[in-house]
Image 1 (cartoon, rainbow, N blue to C red):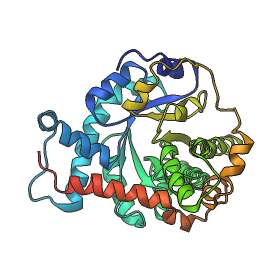
Image 2 (cartoon, rainbow, N blue to C red):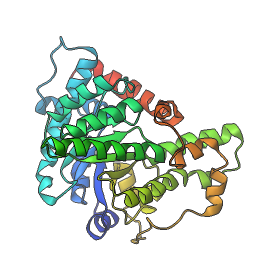
Image 3 (cartoon, rainbow, N blue to C red):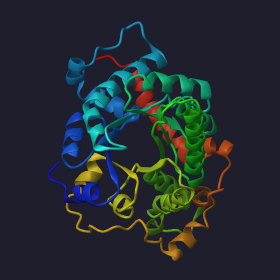
Length: 342
């Protein structure tokens, strides 16, 4: 990646924090040269980098014993890779809050199992004080989030696409922080992800199937509209929890949020697309066109995503984007790690 004026502006002239969205080391190195101060991973990203650079990873990881199989093996590979990556970015902790962290995602095959999620989160948390454990924004995952926050772990609610989900995460962080402080424990980082591009992907198919009035030009505003609304509410309520837009599908998912006090998860491909971005101006407070919102609001699935009370907590796991994303993380990530040999 060449010098990226946009990302350098974003990280030095706005409140935004830039985390790289990949576990590929050369891509991370390039991102760090342009202001990245942390990184996000998931089972797909961990499996992808281990398979793409086996010789490198064999040279830096201890490896997993052949007797370790199944979920235990996938967790072991994740822990080893994340430990190495967390060590790499740890020096950036000196730069301040939300800097020098690496994410590790819990088993995506058990999004409804609170105890399993907590156990995996504790194991990942032991990999380093700068590891952020990603739990699903399901009812069980949010229960695990509160418990882990109470233990002082750094936690991000992911597989999240809706205002209702991130508000529930903000409340889980608040409760967890209160419990931690009561027990003399220093609270960890709390993060709530909105997978803006994956929401757009889902609604695009819904719009076609239901013959909705919303056009493609409307659909690509859906994720942005949801996180903008969540951002306003987060500021009003003063949550000790940072929003993170993720799964960007184009420059617009970053530039429309410019100036936000958020952690921006930016992949190598999106970063490359921003190299020639000339609009160095904040847009987080720009409203979404009311006509676009009106057409999107005719879609019940968008209403679920956009309204603060669009879904109950026990409905989060049933949302279409949630099922799609979990399935990809299982099939294209976790299951590969279960059988991986280097």
